[in-house]
Image (cartoon, rainbow, N blue to C red; front, side, top):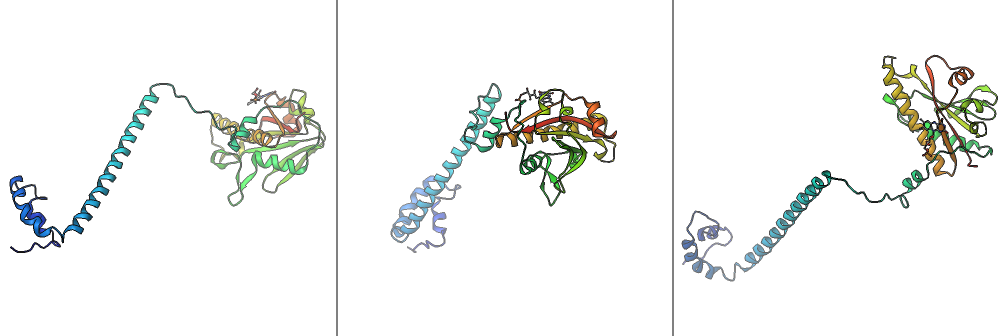
Length: 272
Ligand SMILES: Cc1cc2nc3c(=O)[nH]c(=O)nc-3n(C[C@H](O)[C@H](O)[C@H](O)COP(=O)(O)O)c2cc1C
């Protein structure tokens, strides 16, 4: 009998092992005659096939279990979406940002200790500084990046406009107007009072609907004041925002023009 050529694989086909069209009786009857000459020479190949088969089976079972996990996950999600979801406790004791958020609060009493220029620079940078100088972009977002909020600074000496690009406080007027930045008593004592003014003339070509413009302005001021709160919390300082302002009086003192509107004021300083 001719020796089967084990390198071509044709003999394996001839046995019917891989040919479904052959009857099983044919396959069994041909096996002894094939296996006998294959016995020793084909052992390494059979061994290799066995290893390959076991690898394939193990991969397939991993695939199946991954699919089962996915299905279980989606079932859990479906279950969860049908009712309340209990969240794990926030990592507010260990996550550095969450630790700061945990300390955020409104203060209404301030030490009269003056602030270093470094502290003033820091808090203004946090508020609405330029954090991407290559693009001139800011620490707080603004619609279309129009940057329509001006941050005024009132201290014991005068009123200034924060120029983020030049990193300067531009003097608007001399004298202490801190008490005008709020109707309560604490602003008069706080070393720094930031006044957030929206300039509607900076909103594109001026065709933003009034309500939308107010939303844009308020949203950006909200982000700025939260930046100040978070800087205060992170540096053991105090901050307090307020809407209670005698606006007509303050805007007259600040000499604002028609396109400008006072939104909020915020005190910043050392805690009492
Ligand atoms: C839009 C706005 C206006 C506010 N106006 C005043 C105000 O006029 N006077 C004041 O003492 N606090 C004011 N606050 C501070 C809130 O009273 C304070 O955020 C609130 O009591 C919650 O306290 P917390 O900031 O410590 O969490 C204002 C807050 C916001 C957001």
